[in-house]
Image (cartoon, rainbow, N blue to C red; front, top):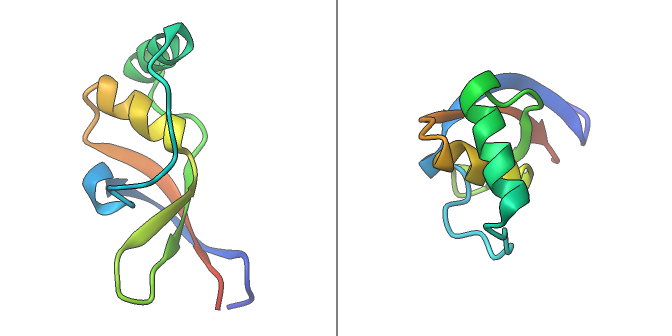
Length: 85
């Protein structure tokens, strides 16, 4: 597969995707609104993840969507897995 091409769209449990990421996601009014939207409609735009050489996945884009899903008590988040080999 060419670098950057999506290898497929799927859903993953949130704990399997880069659990201790260093990115700061603020809990503010905007996040509360987003969580309410996710609770009502779900995540409409999938997050982007890439496979790690040692196994598992690392989130490239979608950290706010992941947090909003957690606040909305969703067990999964839609993701597109990218291959950068």
